[in-house]
Image 1 (cartoon, rainbow, N blue to C red):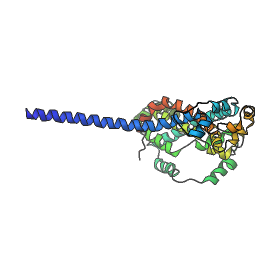
Image 2 (image 1 turned 90 degrees about the vertical axis):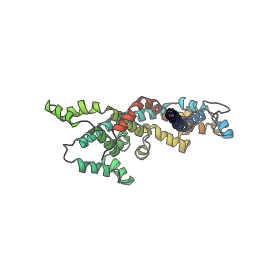
Image 3 (image 1 turned 90 degrees about the horizontal axis):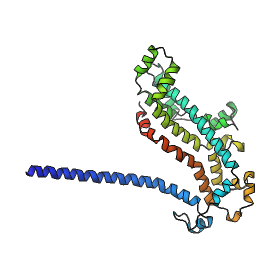
Image 4 (image 1 turned 30 degrees about the vertical axis):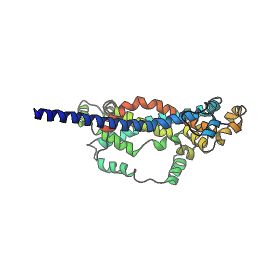
Length: 308
């Protein structure tokens, strides 16, 4: 009888400790989630807050007065914003597709154990992660050798291949049984058919995960545009955001907004709210895309973990 009582007490204690540990883990994740959602909500609210309210009371989750003046300013003459959206969407989509093709091709080559130069090629890819040529040689390469200055390809080509993503893809494809490739060869399939019809369909989780990361990189890219783009028709959305945040005079001096400026008193212009509004407009599409790829993350990153 005492033994049964002791066993029952130990079981109750284990259940109690398990519940407390689960509660603590949930609280930690709730705090992490709030630390991400609260700043995002604050940015949205500030973009909808009256400028005078911001000047007098600062940033508040519940402002005294709401105002859509910042969004009205941009959408009454949307030419610059829509053109920047078009450039950014084109760069993100085309760059992601081309980058995935190159990354998957190189990762597949390095994952083949019958490839005789796996070690030196892998070391070469890894070595490029440690050292770079520098900004000046990079600028000379793009402008004088590749002749990409003031072209849309100056925003795509420099980011097409990342050694880190190549190694992740190699780790994922190394998990695919080599017997599948051998059996396809026995059936008469050539290398390109094996790669396109067998390897790529089996690599969908890794392709989706890396594709989202690559798209994020292209969507947020502005430094290459700052270096290589002088044509205003090729300015991407993020560079427009950077210019806006550094100096709002860039937007107020644009000819596309000349009509709008006649309807606004510059003394009451919502400078602070406008910066937050364009931040929402630039980040909004990626916030909508992310949930559709979330289910691939755990499988893609876990299975594609880098092996030595």
